[in-house]
Amino acid sequence: MKNIIILLVLGLSFSLNAQKKDRHEHIKALKVPFLTEELELTPAEAEKFWPIYNVYDNAMNDLRIRERALFQEKFSESGSKNNLSEKESEKLMTEYKDIIKRKYQLESELMDDLAKKLPASKMVFLPEAEHKFGKKLWEEYKKRKNNK
Image (cartoon, rainbow, N blue to C red):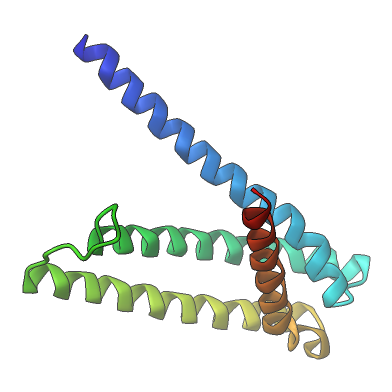
């Protein structure tokens, strides 16, 4: 019986991770044509852009997962604050600051790498295009949630 419960928990864990990966892949599939169009990338530019951007996007996704894990440590499932010791709180703050620094570092590296291969006149609009995509994604989420 104990083995069955362990297998069930492991199976559920793998299933949830697969769903998160599927969700990220689905969002990525929507992002590719959106950013390609927003940045007006030619096929040759897109061929240079996407390998660089995908490495960045995967690293940023890993950071978002780490950030959500920190959030879960701070709050219970009901949303109420967990009682954290000063030491635990300091550890969470340090980890959060590390995530923020790494995000900034990744964005900076992305722009440097893209500037070596693509026109700055297009890459300067990347942050705005990503913001527009995020906003569009959020609006679509709210629309679907209201229709349920």
